[in-house]
Image (cartoon, rainbow, N blue to C red; front, top):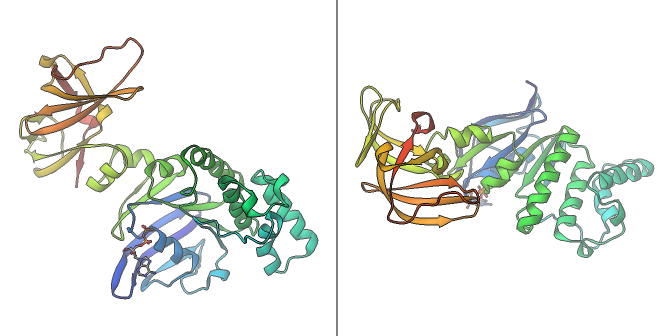
Length: 343
Ligand code: ADP
């Protein structure tokens, strides 16, 4: 595995306020990596430290095999795309994209060729003469991308790059971003608080909360095997149930029990996704009453009452399919393989 970016035991604070606590992670070269977490969890701070805006109190940052911890931003060979795009309003698209190359004193012909290539790559060749104010939000975002990739950085850092776009454009742009990253084979790190964005673009995700890494894995690993409550609830909907694991692996909670769950005996919290629970007749599983139904088109979501617990169950809906009513008594069938024991 070739190293892209290595964060090794990084701790950082603003004044006396700690923001990152002993953060370590490894981004492979060519990987699309996401930092995901609630607002204020330290994602942007970590990205800025990689870019060189700030120095860790302790720990190291490597790009490839180079220790860049103490290097200034311009010596790190990284490119950063900001949420606000940060385009020059008085320059046209061509000049905005050429700016970084001019500062690096490339020859005129080289600049023209590189800018033309970058604009072609983001599909903006026709717009070279426009000012940023004459472009849509999505086009401005593409200019910001072109301006960054034109300097051929080793690592592309993206700070909530799609959050100023409307929902439809955002979905389109993240597909484009992913395709562009693959085409360039560049290492990319994407900061977002939106789990759907992270799932859609990233090969691997680090979930942060309060400056501490909660879990690192592929989107599917995090979704299917969350390590703790924050990861379980941050990446989609989860039924969390407090109870006790008995010797032998049986989980017991107020109102019901599940056999063969495993895990260390003692107090425990389990997580089950709503779509991982099946519905059968009342005598076929854990008997419960439907207290609420939300018909969402592709799925029907039932709220069910099991003892003091409210458990959500999602059932895919097909035309003509059976829909249960509020007040119906049904059985919940939960396979042990669909249950995560949280730490
Ligand atoms: P995120 O990107 O996950 O939303 P940030 O990295 O921006 O989080 O912020 C992490 C914490 O650091 C927050 O509590 C924030 O208030 C604080 N913080 C961010 N920037 C500064 C700053 N320049 N000075 C002081 N505190 C800051």
